[in-house]
Image (tube, rainbow, N blue to C red; front, side, top):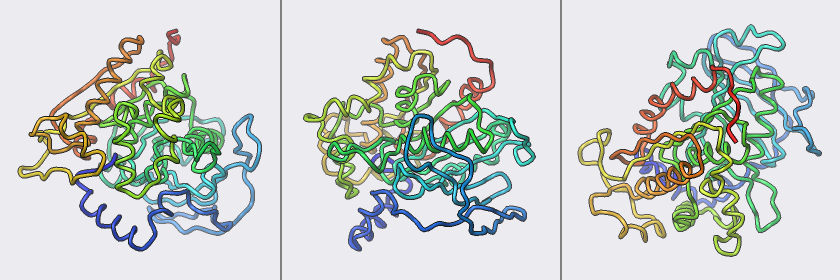
Length: 381
């Protein structure tokens, strides 16, 4: 969701209004507070779980070269025959975060040293780790039975970034949580191997391409569906969406003029050369009604700041969010081609909504899985 997800926006906006009135929204936007010691060992029967409380340390899950407390799993809960939710106490978040695993065949009987290729699926700006199973039921997709699928939670409107926080850094350090803490835990203890691909929808599409660019060689392939790929092209889309949701957007990367270098460090357009050797796919709509929009689909509600961009687009655009995402996606795709990156695209009529993201994930899944299951070739310079 960046900054609106059409099919959920009505109820989400109502919830936001209530949360704002109750003074709860800043807590949702900020990292969760540190919790008391809890959870860990799980006894399962079918698809339900009961969790016993322990606080014993597991193996060290501190990323190499980092000091201070290590992230560790404090809870496991089976939410389906193949769905395991991990609760992780995270120094990067100064609290806890949840990661949903969709486990491959044979995973429960794995032996030490068994490893599976890993597909990371990044949520939209809500950051909900349950979205892909709730909305698309990916646990029923037969193509994913040989792959460990990882769906990490993200702090609300977290933008897949270690926040600038006025130059002080600190939590929420979302990139550190996902790529250092979560990845290290999964590779030490949960059968995750070194072959990785990443995809995401809306803000998660931005995260997928950005993560692959900031960590060259970590991911073999990256895909974005309706992604917020070029924040500096329309910084008012970042600030307007954040203000609409009562998030202090300057904490994320600072001011786009005074801290332009921070924005550039987090903008895939300026990281293009770092994606050489990574397969990239970019898909986005143009904001007009498309094949998956029901007749009579209402326009996006006006969002201050973002609405100022409306004069740039034709009157038939009903999803200004997707029109902006489509512009940014095309700009980044052109930049990647100029930089010599292997990039494919699919641009279409359509709005900023989950039916399109599910379709694009299904279309792109063969490429993502091919990158995981074929032997690695030499990286291109």
